[in-house]
Amino acid sequence: MTAPRRERIRLPRLRAADFQHPLDVAALDAVKQARGLDFIIRKLNEYGWERWFRVTNIADNVRVTPRQCKRIHDLLREACAILALPEPELYLDQDPILNAYTFGTEQPFIVLQSGLVDFLSEDELLGVIAHELGHIKCGHVLYKMMANFLSIIIERIGEATFGLGSLVGTGLLLALYEWDRKAELSCDRAGLLVVQDLDTYLTLLLKLAGGSRAVFDQLNVEEFLRQAEAYEELDRDLLSRVYKFLQVYRRTHAFPAVRAREIKQWAETGAYASLLDGSYWMRPMPPDDVPGRAWSPADSPGPPPTGGAVVLPVCPACGAGQVDPQARFCYQCGHPMDRPAARSALPPPLLAETGLRCPNCDAVISKSDVFCPVCGLNTQLG
Image (tube, rainbow, N blue to C red; front, side):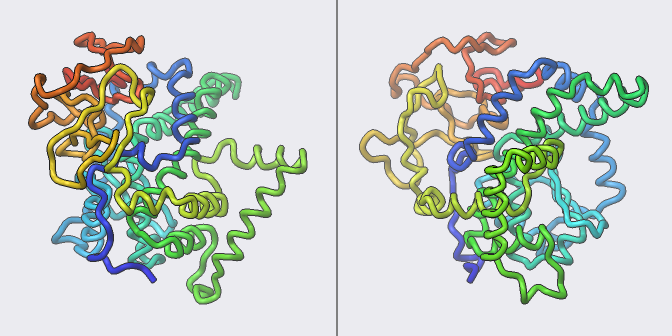
Protein backbone atom coordinates (compact mmCIF):
# COMPACT_ATOMS: atom_id res chain seq x y z
CA MET A 1 0.00 0.00 0.00
CA THR A 2 1.37 3.44 -0.90
CA ALA A 3 2.17 5.74 2.00
CA PRO A 4 -0.17 8.73 2.35
CA ARG A 5 1.34 11.87 0.93
CA ARG A 6 1.80 13.48 4.35
CA GLU A 7 3.87 10.50 5.52
CA ARG A 8 6.39 10.42 2.69
CA ILE A 9 9.93 11.10 3.76
CA ARG A 10 11.57 14.33 2.62
CA LEU A 11 15.17 14.16 1.45
CA PRO A 12 16.72 17.58 2.12
CA ARG A 13 20.20 18.11 0.70
CA LEU A 14 19.88 15.10 -1.58
CA ARG A 15 22.44 15.20 -4.38
CA ALA A 16 22.15 13.53 -7.76
CA ALA A 17 25.32 11.58 -6.95
CA ASP A 18 23.50 9.98 -4.03
CA PHE A 19 21.26 7.96 -6.36
CA GLN A 20 22.58 8.17 -9.92
CA HIS A 21 23.03 4.86 -11.73
CA PRO A 22 26.73 4.16 -12.40
CA LEU A 23 25.97 3.33 -16.04
CA ASP A 24 24.44 6.79 -16.44
CA VAL A 25 27.57 8.45 -15.03
CA ALA A 26 29.95 6.37 -17.15
CA ALA A 27 27.99 6.85 -20.38
CA LEU A 28 27.76 10.62 -19.88
CA ASP A 29 31.50 10.82 -19.25
CA ALA A 30 32.00 9.05 -22.61
CA VAL A 31 29.68 11.53 -24.35
CA LYS A 32 31.58 14.50 -22.92
CA GLN A 33 34.76 13.17 -24.53
CA ALA A 34 33.16 12.91 -27.99
CA ARG A 35 34.36 15.19 -30.77
CA GLY A 36 31.84 17.78 -31.92
CA LEU A 37 30.24 18.25 -28.52
CA ASP A 38 31.29 21.89 -28.18
CA PHE A 39 29.85 22.69 -31.62
CA ILE A 40 26.45 21.27 -30.75
CA ILE A 41 26.32 23.17 -27.45
CA ARG A 42 27.24 26.43 -29.19
CA LYS A 43 24.52 25.95 -31.79
CA LEU A 44 21.90 25.15 -29.18
CA ASN A 45 22.78 28.39 -27.44
CA GLU A 46 23.00 30.38 -30.68
CA TYR A 47 19.60 29.43 -32.03
CA GLY A 48 17.80 29.71 -28.70
CA TRP A 49 16.01 26.42 -29.34
CA GLU A 50 14.65 26.46 -25.82
CA ARG A 51 12.60 29.56 -26.58
CA TRP A 52 10.76 27.81 -29.41
CA PHE A 53 9.32 25.23 -27.06
CA ARG A 54 8.52 27.81 -24.40
CA VAL A 55 6.43 29.81 -26.88
CA THR A 56 4.62 26.60 -27.87
CA ASN A 57 3.85 25.78 -24.25
CA ILE A 58 2.44 29.20 -23.50
CA ALA A 59 0.29 29.26 -26.64
CA ASP A 60 -0.85 25.66 -27.01
CA ASN A 61 -0.64 23.86 -23.64
CA VAL A 62 -2.16 24.34 -20.19
CA ARG A 63 0.18 25.49 -17.45
CA VAL A 64 -0.35 23.72 -14.13
CA THR A 65 -0.49 26.15 -11.19
CA PRO A 66 -2.12 26.25 -7.74
CA ARG A 67 -5.19 27.69 -9.48
CA GLN A 68 -5.05 25.49 -12.58
CA CYS A 69 -5.21 21.71 -12.13
CA LYS A 70 -4.41 22.04 -8.44
CA ARG A 71 -4.24 18.30 -7.74
CA ILE A 72 -1.50 17.84 -10.31
CA HIS A 73 0.31 20.90 -9.00
CA ASP A 74 0.18 19.39 -5.51
CA LEU A 75 1.96 16.32 -6.89
CA LEU A 76 4.65 18.52 -8.42
CA ARG A 77 5.08 20.42 -5.18
CA GLU A 78 5.38 17.23 -3.15
CA ALA A 79 7.91 15.66 -5.53
CA CYS A 80 10.04 18.81 -5.49
CA ALA A 81 9.94 18.94 -1.70
CA ILE A 82 11.15 15.34 -1.45
CA LEU A 83 13.94 15.71 -4.02
CA ALA A 84 15.04 19.14 -2.75
CA LEU A 85 14.40 20.92 -6.04
CA PRO A 86 12.81 24.27 -6.93
CA GLU A 87 9.54 23.88 -8.81
CA PRO A 88 9.90 23.98 -12.61
CA GLU A 89 7.04 24.98 -14.86
CA LEU A 90 4.63 22.12 -15.59
CA TYR A 91 2.33 21.93 -18.63
CA LEU A 92 -0.40 19.61 -19.88
CA ASP A 93 -0.45 18.76 -23.59
CA GLN A 94 -3.54 17.33 -25.26
CA ASP A 95 -2.21 14.03 -26.61
CA PRO A 96 -3.49 10.49 -26.00
CA ILE A 97 0.03 9.02 -26.16
CA LEU A 98 1.47 8.05 -22.77
CA ASN A 99 4.50 10.32 -22.59
CA ALA A 100 6.16 13.10 -20.63
CA TYR A 101 9.33 15.04 -21.27
CA THR A 102 11.56 17.70 -19.72
CA PHE A 103 13.18 20.53 -21.63
CA GLY A 104 15.11 23.72 -20.98
CA THR A 105 18.35 24.48 -19.20
CA GLU A 106 17.89 28.11 -18.18
CA GLN A 107 14.27 27.59 -17.08
CA PRO A 108 13.47 23.87 -17.15
CA PHE A 109 9.90 22.79 -17.74
CA ILE A 110 8.03 19.50 -17.76
CA VAL A 111 5.26 18.53 -20.17
CA LEU A 112 2.75 15.79 -19.32
CA GLN A 113 0.64 14.47 -22.15
CA SER A 114 -3.03 14.09 -21.30
CA GLY A 115 -2.98 10.34 -21.97
CA LEU A 116 -0.86 9.87 -18.85
CA VAL A 117 -3.26 11.84 -16.66
CA ASP A 118 -6.22 9.81 -17.94
CA PHE A 119 -4.47 6.45 -17.65
CA LEU A 120 -2.49 6.49 -14.40
CA SER A 121 -3.44 6.60 -10.76
CA GLU A 122 -2.45 9.65 -8.73
CA ASP A 123 0.50 7.85 -7.13
CA GLU A 124 1.69 6.58 -10.51
CA LEU A 125 1.44 10.10 -11.95
CA LEU A 126 3.52 11.29 -9.01
CA GLY A 127 6.13 8.74 -10.09
CA VAL A 128 6.16 10.15 -13.63
CA ILE A 129 6.59 13.72 -12.38
CA ALA A 130 9.38 12.62 -10.05
CA HIS A 131 11.08 10.75 -12.92
CA GLU A 132 11.09 13.94 -14.99
CA LEU A 133 12.40 15.94 -12.04
CA GLY A 134 15.20 13.39 -11.88
CA HIS A 135 16.41 14.61 -15.28
CA ILE A 136 16.68 18.14 -13.87
CA LYS A 137 18.32 16.97 -10.66
CA CYS A 138 20.92 14.92 -12.54
CA GLY A 139 21.74 17.61 -15.10
CA HIS A 140 20.47 15.50 -18.02
CA VAL A 141 18.41 18.11 -19.84
CA LEU A 142 21.16 19.79 -21.87
CA TYR A 143 22.37 16.48 -23.29
CA LYS A 144 18.85 15.28 -24.06
CA MET A 145 18.32 18.53 -25.96
CA MET A 146 21.57 17.85 -27.83
CA ALA A 147 20.40 14.40 -28.90
CA ASN A 148 17.16 15.86 -30.22
CA PHE A 149 18.94 18.72 -31.99
CA LEU A 150 21.60 16.49 -33.52
CA SER A 151 19.08 13.96 -34.84
CA ILE A 152 17.29 16.75 -36.75
CA ILE A 153 20.57 18.03 -38.19
CA ILE A 154 21.61 14.56 -39.36
CA GLU A 155 18.20 13.98 -40.95
CA ARG A 156 18.38 17.27 -42.89
CA ILE A 157 21.94 16.59 -44.04
CA GLY A 158 20.91 13.10 -45.16
CA GLU A 159 17.99 14.47 -47.19
CA ALA A 160 20.28 16.94 -48.94
CA THR A 161 23.00 14.40 -49.77
CA PHE A 162 20.96 11.31 -50.67
CA GLY A 163 21.77 9.73 -47.32
CA LEU A 164 25.55 10.04 -47.52
CA GLY A 165 25.75 13.05 -45.26
CA SER A 166 23.83 11.28 -42.53
CA LEU A 167 27.06 9.50 -41.60
CA VAL A 168 28.32 12.83 -40.23
CA GLY A 169 27.77 12.98 -36.49
CA THR A 170 26.20 9.52 -36.30
CA GLY A 171 28.84 8.32 -33.84
CA LEU A 172 28.09 11.16 -31.42
CA LEU A 173 24.36 10.66 -31.83
CA LEU A 174 24.60 6.94 -31.03
CA ALA A 175 26.72 7.76 -27.98
CA LEU A 176 24.02 10.20 -26.86
CA TYR A 177 21.31 7.56 -27.37
CA GLU A 178 23.35 5.05 -25.36
CA TRP A 179 23.68 7.54 -22.53
CA ASP A 180 20.01 8.56 -22.80
CA ARG A 181 18.89 4.99 -22.12
CA LYS A 182 21.15 4.79 -19.07
CA ALA A 183 19.91 8.17 -17.81
CA GLU A 184 16.40 6.73 -17.53
CA LEU A 185 17.69 4.29 -14.91
CA SER A 186 18.80 7.15 -12.68
CA CYS A 187 15.46 8.89 -13.08
CA ASP A 188 13.56 5.73 -12.20
CA ARG A 189 15.47 5.84 -8.93
CA ALA A 190 14.33 9.44 -8.41
CA GLY A 191 10.78 8.31 -9.12
CA LEU A 192 10.97 5.55 -6.52
CA LEU A 193 12.52 7.89 -3.95
CA VAL A 194 9.44 10.09 -4.26
CA VAL A 195 6.71 7.46 -4.55
CA GLN A 196 8.40 5.38 -1.82
CA ASP A 197 6.52 2.24 -2.82
CA LEU A 198 8.17 -0.31 -5.13
CA ASP A 199 4.94 -2.02 -6.21
CA THR A 200 3.46 1.29 -7.32
CA TYR A 201 6.49 2.14 -9.44
CA LEU A 202 6.65 -1.34 -10.98
CA THR A 203 2.94 -1.10 -11.85
CA LEU A 204 3.63 2.26 -13.50
CA LEU A 205 6.28 0.67 -15.75
CA LEU A 206 3.96 -2.25 -16.49
CA LYS A 207 1.21 0.11 -17.62
CA LEU A 208 3.63 2.04 -19.81
CA ALA A 209 4.68 -1.23 -21.44
CA GLY A 210 1.23 -2.41 -22.42
CA GLY A 211 -1.44 -1.84 -19.85
CA SER A 212 -5.09 -1.39 -20.74
CA ARG A 213 -7.98 -0.17 -18.62
CA ALA A 214 -9.86 -3.31 -19.63
CA VAL A 215 -7.30 -5.54 -17.87
CA PHE A 216 -6.01 -3.37 -15.02
CA ASP A 217 -7.21 -5.90 -12.47
CA GLN A 218 -5.39 -8.70 -14.31
CA LEU A 219 -1.93 -7.12 -14.54
CA ASN A 220 0.75 -9.13 -12.74
CA VAL A 221 4.02 -7.44 -11.83
CA GLU A 222 5.78 -10.75 -11.08
CA GLU A 223 5.03 -12.04 -14.58
CA PHE A 224 6.32 -8.78 -16.00
CA LEU A 225 9.59 -9.22 -14.10
CA ARG A 226 9.91 -12.74 -15.49
CA GLN A 227 9.81 -11.17 -18.96
CA ALA A 228 12.84 -9.08 -18.00
CA GLU A 229 14.67 -12.24 -16.91
CA ALA A 230 13.81 -13.93 -20.21
CA TYR A 231 15.09 -10.87 -22.09
CA GLU A 232 18.36 -11.06 -20.16
CA GLU A 233 18.77 -14.74 -20.98
CA LEU A 234 18.78 -13.90 -24.69
CA ASP A 235 22.38 -12.75 -24.27
CA ARG A 236 23.46 -16.41 -24.35
CA ASP A 237 22.68 -16.49 -28.07
CA LEU A 238 24.88 -14.44 -30.43
CA LEU A 239 22.12 -13.85 -32.99
CA SER A 240 19.73 -12.70 -30.26
CA ARG A 241 22.34 -10.27 -29.00
CA VAL A 242 22.61 -8.82 -32.51
CA TYR A 243 18.83 -8.44 -32.69
CA LYS A 244 18.77 -6.79 -29.27
CA PHE A 245 21.36 -4.26 -30.39
CA LEU A 246 19.48 -3.46 -33.60
CA GLN A 247 16.29 -2.91 -31.62
CA VAL A 248 17.75 -0.55 -29.03
CA TYR A 249 20.63 1.38 -30.58
CA ARG A 250 18.39 4.25 -31.70
CA ARG A 251 16.05 4.18 -28.72
CA THR A 252 16.18 6.95 -26.14
CA HIS A 253 14.55 4.82 -23.44
CA ALA A 254 15.42 1.39 -22.13
CA PHE A 255 12.65 -1.19 -22.46
CA PRO A 256 10.13 -1.02 -19.57
CA ALA A 257 10.82 -4.62 -18.52
CA VAL A 258 14.54 -3.86 -18.24
CA ARG A 259 13.82 -0.73 -16.24
CA ALA A 260 11.55 -2.72 -13.92
CA ARG A 261 14.29 -5.26 -13.26
CA GLU A 262 16.88 -2.53 -12.63
CA ILE A 263 14.74 -0.56 -10.17
CA LYS A 264 13.76 -3.72 -8.29
CA GLN A 265 17.40 -4.76 -7.95
CA TRP A 266 18.36 -1.30 -6.69
CA ALA A 267 15.56 -1.30 -4.13
CA GLU A 268 16.66 -4.71 -2.87
CA THR A 269 20.35 -3.82 -2.47
CA GLY A 270 19.61 -1.60 0.50
CA ALA A 271 20.83 1.60 -1.17
CA TYR A 272 17.25 2.81 -1.57
CA ALA A 273 16.33 2.14 2.05
CA SER A 274 19.52 3.74 3.31
CA LEU A 275 18.67 6.98 1.48
CA LEU A 276 15.22 7.04 3.06
CA ASP A 277 16.90 6.42 6.43
CA GLY A 278 19.00 9.55 5.93
CA SER A 279 22.39 7.94 5.39
CA TYR A 280 23.27 10.47 2.70
CA TRP A 281 23.50 13.11 5.41
CA MET A 282 26.65 11.37 6.56
CA ARG A 283 28.82 11.69 3.50
CA PRO A 284 32.36 10.30 3.65
CA MET A 285 35.31 12.13 2.16
CA PRO A 286 36.26 10.15 -0.97
CA PRO A 287 39.44 11.76 -2.33
CA ASP A 288 38.38 11.31 -5.95
CA ASP A 289 34.73 12.37 -5.67
CA VAL A 290 35.35 15.89 -6.93
CA PRO A 291 39.07 16.41 -7.47
CA GLY A 292 40.68 19.74 -6.77
CA ARG A 293 38.60 21.01 -3.85
CA ALA A 294 37.97 20.09 -0.24
CA TRP A 295 34.86 18.85 1.57
CA SER A 296 34.10 20.55 4.87
CA PRO A 297 31.48 20.73 7.63
CA ALA A 298 28.81 23.43 7.56
CA ASP A 299 26.69 24.62 10.46
CA SER A 300 23.06 23.93 9.59
CA PRO A 301 20.06 22.03 10.97
CA GLY A 302 19.87 18.28 10.47
CA PRO A 303 21.46 15.09 11.71
CA PRO A 304 24.92 15.81 13.13
CA PRO A 305 27.98 14.31 11.46
CA THR A 306 29.75 11.45 13.16
CA GLY A 307 33.21 9.96 12.78
CA GLY A 308 34.82 11.06 9.52
CA ALA A 309 31.53 12.15 7.95
CA VAL A 310 30.76 15.74 7.02
CA VAL A 311 27.66 17.71 6.10
CA LEU A 312 28.02 19.88 3.01
CA PRO A 313 26.92 23.49 2.52
CA VAL A 314 23.73 23.45 0.45
CA CYS A 315 22.48 25.55 -2.46
CA PRO A 316 19.33 27.43 -1.38
CA ALA A 317 17.81 27.01 -4.86
CA CYS A 318 18.41 23.39 -5.92
CA GLY A 319 19.55 21.72 -2.70
CA ALA A 320 22.85 20.52 -4.17
CA GLY A 321 25.59 19.86 -1.64
CA GLN A 322 28.56 22.16 -2.24
CA VAL A 323 32.01 20.61 -2.13
CA ASP A 324 33.70 24.00 -1.83
CA PRO A 325 32.77 25.70 1.46
CA GLN A 326 33.76 29.08 0.01
CA ALA A 327 31.83 28.71 -3.25
CA ARG A 328 30.14 31.89 -4.38
CA PHE A 329 27.89 30.06 -6.84
CA CYS A 330 26.28 26.61 -6.87
CA TYR A 331 28.21 24.23 -9.12
CA GLN A 332 24.96 22.53 -10.20
CA CYS A 333 22.50 25.37 -10.95
CA GLY A 334 24.64 28.54 -10.75
CA HIS A 335 22.55 30.16 -8.00
CA PRO A 336 24.52 32.56 -5.73
CA MET A 337 25.35 31.03 -2.37
CA ASP A 338 23.92 32.99 0.56
CA ARG A 339 26.68 32.81 3.14
CA PRO A 340 30.06 31.35 2.14
CA ALA A 341 31.83 29.90 5.17
CA ALA A 342 34.50 32.01 6.82
CA ARG A 343 37.97 31.14 5.52
CA SER A 344 39.51 31.09 9.00
CA ALA A 345 37.06 28.45 10.21
CA LEU A 346 37.88 25.99 7.46
CA PRO A 347 40.66 23.57 6.69
CA PRO A 348 42.84 24.53 3.71
CA PRO A 349 41.25 23.40 0.43
CA LEU A 350 42.80 20.58 -1.55
CA LEU A 351 43.84 22.27 -4.76
CA ALA A 352 45.03 19.25 -6.68
CA GLU A 353 45.45 20.21 -10.33
CA THR A 354 42.72 18.60 -12.40
CA GLY A 355 43.71 20.06 -15.77
CA LEU A 356 40.35 21.84 -15.91
CA ARG A 357 40.02 25.58 -15.41
CA CYS A 358 37.21 28.07 -15.83
CA PRO A 359 37.71 29.95 -19.15
CA ASN A 360 36.47 33.15 -17.48
CA CYS A 361 38.27 33.39 -14.13
CA ASP A 362 40.85 30.57 -14.45
CA ALA A 363 39.69 28.89 -11.22
CA VAL A 364 40.32 25.18 -10.82
CA ILE A 365 37.07 23.33 -11.59
CA SER A 366 35.92 19.72 -11.69
CA LYS A 367 34.40 17.85 -14.61
CA SER A 368 31.20 17.63 -12.55
CA ASP A 369 30.89 21.45 -12.28
CA VAL A 370 28.12 22.69 -14.55
CA PHE A 371 28.80 26.22 -13.23
CA CYS A 372 32.05 27.68 -11.99
CA PRO A 373 31.75 28.01 -8.19
CA VAL A 374 33.89 31.17 -8.25
CA CYS A 375 32.41 33.33 -11.03
CA GLY A 376 29.18 31.47 -11.88
CA LEU A 377 29.99 30.88 -15.58
CA ASN A 378 28.07 28.04 -17.23
CA THR A 379 31.09 25.90 -18.09
CA GLN A 380 29.12 23.80 -20.60
CA LEU A 381 28.11 26.81 -22.67
CA GLY A 382 30.95 29.19 -21.99
